[in-house]
Image 1 (tube, rainbow, N blue to C red):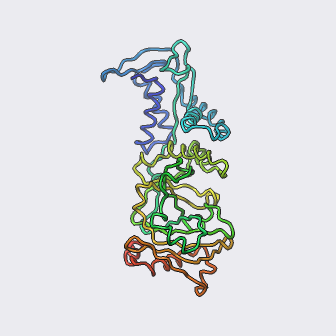
Image 2: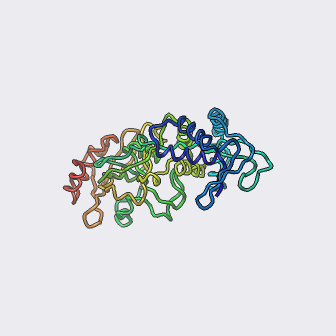
Image 3: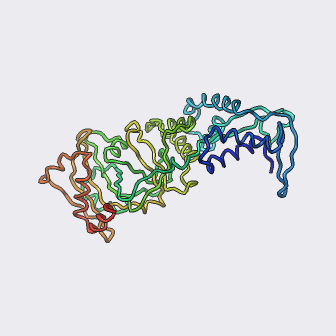
Length: 372
């Protein structure tokens, strides 16, 4: 296995960014470049590992300085604003991945005479990744918190009684899932919002639109990696690209946002449960989360309200759906007599939570979660 000297530096940088949380990125970059020099790997050498032994072979190119690396990175970053223009609905995930590798990599020339498959196209590269630190990983949804999700529905209550099951209020099966901001087509993930208002805006509901507004409570902490702005320039560019407002005809652009999350904010590498990210529909004034389908056992479904949007602040609720202990659903029509829910203030979610809990067969268990 052979390393270009700059590739060795890259591996050290990536390791240091994960493991050495006390140092700044500037210090890590400089230490990594100095490591190569201190190890007597002089300008233009390759280190090779054979059966545990290292051998050094000389070639003729220079290790760049820290300033040269930063200058190169700045130049590459200037290209990224147009990245959405560089692919179409025909672009593959591999193409997008290669596009990122090209833009977010410092490149410098090496002599043509040593170009080969190992030294691709006479260029050497050093990646520069905005990996999260401990403080950035300290994010999530605490035990006993409420979360929300909405699904369009304008069927009659009788139709819903015959068609809906408990699973209807969770994530869809893989085969029914369209591409999304954080998922491929046929790749199920559980999207939730921090409030009913956020959920309604994310689904772009307008006056007269109807749907089931689902209520969940966390049974244990849901640990998430945040896709949010930091003091890292590259990370902030990633957040801005991830937060692109994408319309229905351009959903193929979700390939890019998913690749950003997978490459730069991979929650599985940090042994977390999913992502937290700014709500695009609220101009980042609220938060959404995408929870791994294998971690949704950390949440409990406490019920759903079928709403009809009146305006930005109010909705009408005609019935609620409550899960029973036997796994079946109880449909409760509210009727005209309950005037409050004829014009329900969207931000007053606790009134609906109390209605759901008061009519739940598992009332004591839910109350215990919310009080712990």
